[in-house]
Length: 568
Ligand code: M6R
Image (cartoon, rainbow, N blue to C red; front, side, top):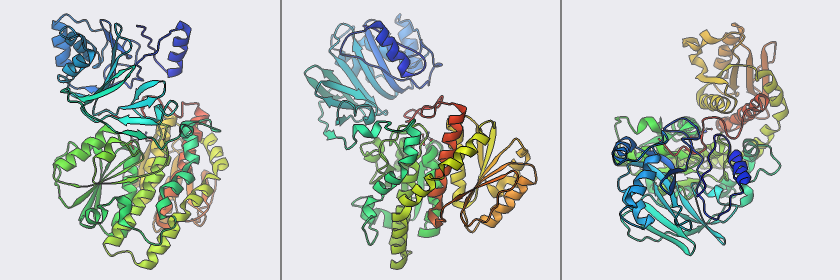
């Protein structure tokens, strides 16, 4: 058995493997996102015990108790990770059985927490055991062998035939095939699914970065997501699933649960749902909601939003809502086979295609498209959408991909702004109404990939505190479409200007804000009414991307972050 570990990029490990001229046809590997113990070689996976090796995604919650018991049994720990207990525990079980599959299942019975595990041992290199509880895991069945991974996109280079394991499933992989069973040993069958994704979808192609590719894919991603309304003359609840009419129609209020960028999409949707569909809506960060004592109403429509469908906090928040008796559930998700989609009564799959860059872009705009459709369907079910408005709204939706394309053409101007901006240490983002969440999203994009400290505020809140931060070193970025709040926003911008703050204003063609010294103005080609939030986020994505390029950061894999946050 050869163990190679390194800190940094996978490419460094690949170079190490090449240098050792390692041979073999079975292996396990993991890119660790540190939960217990700093990122270091000694904490990197695989962890070994005797001749056995383990990789693990997730968190073993009872690792401290297990560690003490295993130490008492004489096991010596060489890392600070929770994972190492799994290696020693399985090794201990192997003292009573020669069968690795049995030993792993016995060990699993003692683990609390979340895991996707792969285990193998030196004495039987043609045998790998995998198990799943709470963290995603799927098998890929290829002509030349069997693969296991956390995400389908990791396997597209070798196969499109996938088997999605469920929580509580374990599998043993041998040369002659795969056997799946539950932790107690009961055999189970899981369907083989032909992935609809092509290997090209995860290739960079002509682009330098996935984030860049994904920003420019937005017109197509939106067109695909909105395809089902492409030729429609009316909106049907069936877009959200067979039971949608009764589930959506009977809802008295909406509760949106999500994290990060998906939470921002939910915040925009609240403005739409309340104003257009006339239904009360609250939006909660999933990690807060799951631990909060809230007042449940069974007539609530619980909407979970997630690109990956594997975000641990969002999944747990959904379970929490269901445990409180709220059964009207909808997932808006980009991954059809994800855990989230399997847990809700209704679903809408955004068709953005695989999103690889850690900073979410096309997932966000397609989520907004889905949420706008939801708003219109709810409005219709509640008698708030007349036939004429419905036709007008459908027409506006069909135009969205072309409108986004025109916004993307502003890239050269945005690039020039990025040059002016990249030396800044801090930034304030302002927006009002449904553009406040767009300011939040702009700030998140900037901090994620350029590491510039950025905060977003509803512009009216400026004078209640953050204005104290404004001086010539604090640039202010304003999302300023020509809506009913524009005049108010202009006053807020004057407050900034009067204090020497440099303004970068993303306006509409007709916003009537002029450039002057210290005031940079970029005009989006058209004013887009209720949907303008969807357009106004695009220049902010491009802006962050170009600032990060000037700063030379790792755009697609920013430090400390993971694409899919499958741990709590
Ligand atoms: O897969 P999800 O949409 O559930 O992910 C939620 C957040 O982790 C994600 O949006 C994160 O904030 C992104 N890195 C933002 O760019």
